[in-house]
Length: 97
Length: 154
Image (cartoon, rainbow over all chains, first blue to last red; front, side):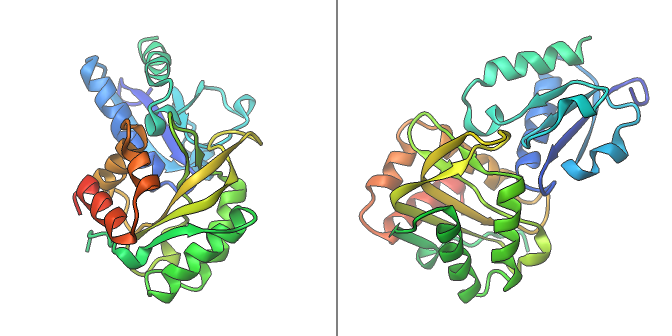
């Protein structure tokens, strides 16, 4: 948590391409569901540096989920549309925890 | 300068390659010859693709969106290639599972947020019924360029 809001890390390989699309999608999803959150968009390599207080990592890359103390959700559905509803629900469950 | 270039010189029709590396090389060389990317871009895209794969299965054709860090880019551009025969790309977010790719969108990106809208519209092409088929069935680079520019709002 950060400033009383859920802290979500959104990451991809470069931190500029797919994470930009995912960042916007997660922001809209939260807004639609009246959830206050703070998002940090970064490269996956930078995630450890932002881990303090993070509640969730949403990423388009391969990650070793056991490395993190918070849940990790794959974001590919935001790009392809395949399985989108399921991923949105997974994210909402974590944000409403 | 947030504008992204996509003209007919950036559309490669029915290119052949035995694997993704050959396809990436042809596309990166094309972008370098046109001045959009630096000589370091090709190697950087290949290195990145190995660590952060960009294959995307869609409801119709397999797609890949190889790209790399901004320092290898001179001017933002998108290169589109339709492959004569699909080649395998590892799926984004997967360890080793791959997807046969028919269409490659190679992205040369600069800033982070300026490109959101174009990236979102590109993903809509991936999701829209029949949009990728239009690219597969097009008969000239010009028609693919026109279709893409309309869809991306360029």
